[in-house]
Length: 147
Image 1 (cartoon, rainbow, N blue to C red):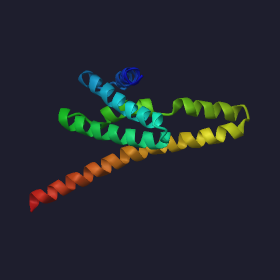
Image 2: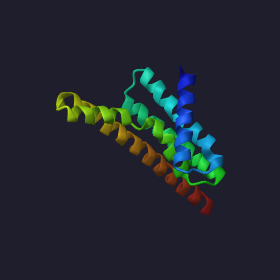
Image 3: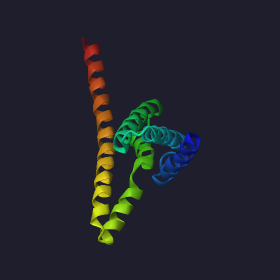
Image 4: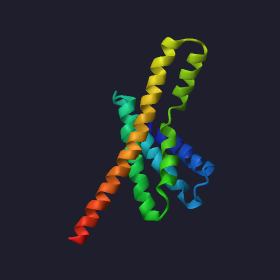
C-alpha cells in the first residue's frame, strides 16, 4: 500500500514539475520530494492522527527537503516546494464542498469547506515555518562566524 502511494505521488509530483516547467534535471527530485511528503501524510492518517496535523508535518518536511535540494543543486527552492506540495492540496475535498453548496446542502458543505480551509492553512504554515527556521539558522550561523 505504501509503495503504491509512494509511486503514484512520485508520478504526480514529477508531472506537475513538467507542467510548471521545472528544469529537466530536477524532475526526479521533485517527484521524490512529493512522494516523501505524501507518505508522511498517509502514515499520519493511517495512524488515526488528524489530516490537518499530517498535512502540516508533511508540508514542513517537504519545505525542508526542498531547501536542502535547492542548496545542494543551486536551484530555487520553489521548484521543489511547488511540485512537492501538489499531492497534499485538498482539491477533491474542495470540489465536494462546492458541489454540496451548489446543491444547497449546507449541512454537508460547511464542515467539508472548513476542513479544506484548515488543510490549506496547514500547508501554508508548514511552508512558512520551515522558511523561518531556515532563516533563523542562517543568522545564527553568521553570528557565530563573526565572533
